[in-house]
Length: 240
Image 1 (tube, rainbow, N blue to C red):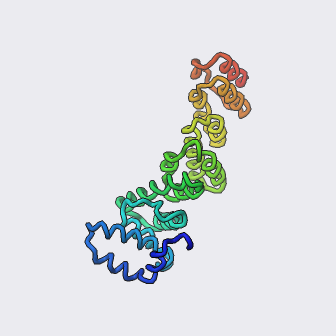
Image 2 (cartoon, rainbow, N blue to C red):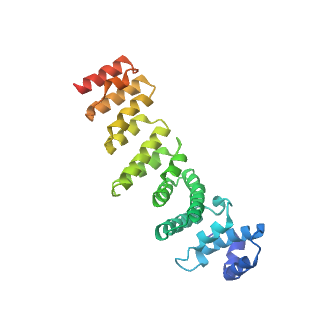
Image 3 (cartoon, one colour):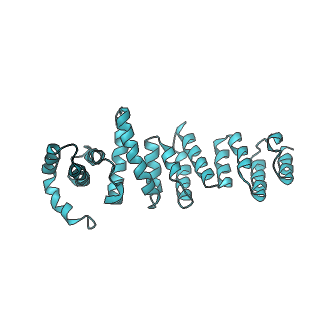
C-alpha cells in the first residue's frame, strides 16, 4: 500500500460515487476512459468479492497501458480474467476484448520476472501462442522450465499442448538440444528428427544424433542426404 498514490487512498471512500459519475458521463468522453481505469484500480480493495469489477472497468477503459498500476494490479487482473474465461460462455467480441488484455499482460510479465504468471494465464485462457510470441533469449529458460514442470500435473491433451509450447519456444530461440529433449518427451519421432534439419552447426548435429541414438529413435537416412557425412554415419550407426 505504500506504493499506491495518495490521491487513490483518499478516493477509496468515494468508490460508489465514482461509479455513479462514470455512468452519467458520455461514452465518447476521454475522461470517462481515464475514470474507468481509476475505478478499476480502486476495485482491488473496494469492490465486493467475486464482482470482478477490476476487470470490468479495465475493459471499459480500453487500450490504456496495463503496466501503469504495477505488479499486484496485473496479478489481480490475471485472476479475474481466468475466472471470467472459465465460468462464462463468452460472446466472440467479449473473448476478443479479453485476449487483447491478455496480449498486453503477458509481455509485461515476461519482462518483469513473472514468467510463471504469464504461463498460467495463457494456459487458463487456452492461448499459448501469445506466450510463444513473448518468448526471447532472456525469459525462455524460466518459462520453459515452468511449462515442463506443470505438464506433469495436466491431463491429456493439455499436457501435450504445454509440451508442444515448450518445444516451439526452444525452437524459436534455436535451443535445439533442449527442443529435442521435449520432442522425445512428447514421443513424437517426426519432431525429434526434424530438429536435425533446423540446426546448421555440424558439431551440434552430431550431438543431436547421439541423443537420437540413445533414445533409440529410428531415422530415415534418405531424408537427411544434405547433412555432413560424419553426421550421416552416426545416424547409420544408431540404426545398427
